[in-house]
Image 1 (cartoon, rainbow, N blue to C red):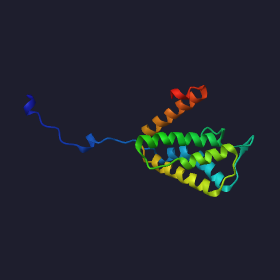
Image 2 (cartoon, helix red, strand yellow; image 1 turned 90 degrees about the vertical axis):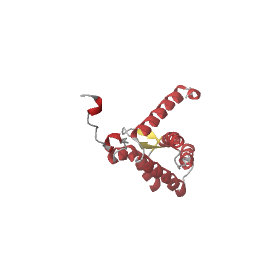
Image 3 (cartoon, rainbow, N blue to C red; image 1 turned 60 degrees about the vertical axis):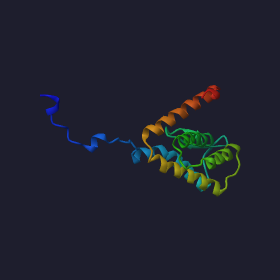
Image 4 (cartoon, rainbow, N blue to C red; image 1 turned 120 degrees about the horizontal axis):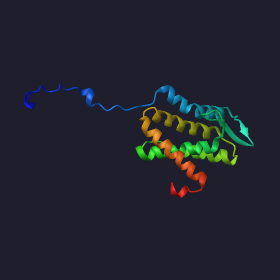
Length: 155
């Protein structure tokens, strides 16, 4: 059959649609659950400590120091914010992490303003494609590994 007499393919708009893989709600809750639990503890005014440093249970169920974790969370979200131009400011997270690291007593407004940033990151996370957040999280893990090896400038 000559090419000119072949029937044309019928237009199907679904064939040209780009599928954006957004996180499911249960997996998003699994990512944010330790962070929410730590901020819930901070809101009560009491938090677990190990050798005087505030700690929380991380994603693997191990105790993790809270101040560096919040700082790492802010670093990762700063990467995402720069890349996608999101209207989120992580300054309150950094302020809270610095206060926790230095042992400065927290004020209720410090915790509530940092929790508002966490809530803003939650709303952004459930709308972002999984590939973007995964890529930035891996980049942050690499930066942490470089920092541990003492070659932070190369990252």
